[in-house]
Image (cartoon, rainbow, N blue to C red; front, side, top):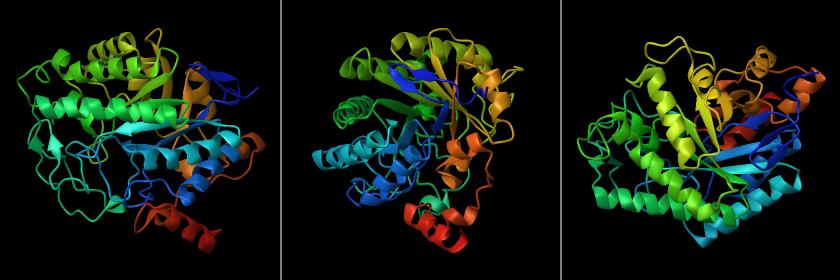
Length: 365
């Protein structure tokens, strides 16, 4: 029997297979942040294609500095919440569950309709260049360092958005602690050069992530699914390593678990890349060893290696982005042995919108 298509659970969410749609920014909301009918159809197609669990794209959590991209969806007001309720309702009607990913851009901001300058832990900009498929910014803007008042506002934004996500019908939430966004920046010694309680050693750099996990757990209740996506890497820096390596990651995961986290969603270039400093283990391998914390793994999974990965990580769910984007019916194709293709980058050009993807499909399929 296929390891991929075994019954699984994530908290109280029952699943008929272990395949998960990874969160992917699609910059296809209204200017004011409400999800559109196009987004309703987009997410429903994954459910109809056999994915039992969908993690939505990152949504901004406040009307200050959290928005990262133009046409990014938010979850900050009644209109956005009502529009998300329609999206989630369509996914549920098709028989699948959906998790809302909450994020704050921090220094990695390419557009924000509420403020001109990004807010960061320091005045350090991300490495590399902004991604052109998400906007027209040519160079990163130097962020304004946050003070304790800003950090308290950010906490309130995450908690408020978490409450709205639950009210909109999402089956759980995922805190975006990966991919260079603010929660990732707290852990990163590249971004976090602070000398106060939020910086310095790993205990200080982790403090806000623990606090926000506890606050969201208190707001949503003990049975609600609350996860965190976690990575060392960012979209423009595949080489960064946490200085504390394997022991540091284990420390992070155990403390987040104790703060109320249901699962961790690891992300790397490849699931089994040995990227931790002075270690022969991957992030996923270390996470799989932490008791009492469920695991979703992501990175370089394809039809060629998925059975091996599923067998290696028998208790983990497996999230896929690129392959899911090409084939929204990927579970059915894997089950039936149908052809599966690589992602054509032109599907996401000139911008990674759902409409551009649909236009590509009309021409190429």
